[in-house]
Length: 140
Image (cartoon, rainbow, N blue to C red):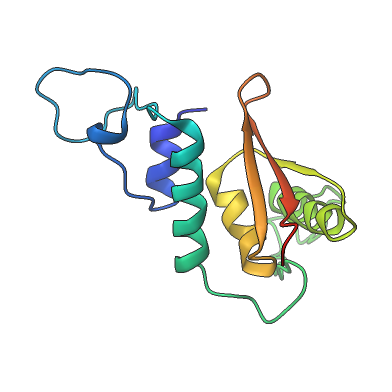
């Protein structure tokens, strides 16, 4: 996982002043970006996502796939799409955190999708797993 690319994809501003590396003559964050204080930076990133993410009217993530016939005329090969696995992962995380358990996600984009439905979450980074622990806030 490249944190810099993940932050760019989620549109979370970051720069060299927040980085622990001392890259000479750099004014913008590079691909080696790593925050000098991970906890404070994660709180900043989640707060930013919370402010900029519109709330969904639904309670779970839904995607509507329109099957197009392939060249042979068939439309359904019986294989789930990668997007269906993604939707299942987000919805499983929502189900877990709503029942007081912990869910795990891997990118800020995934965290943003959960925030659409449950804005009051706590996020903790687990470096050994390269994952984010997601749970409901205690004081909703």
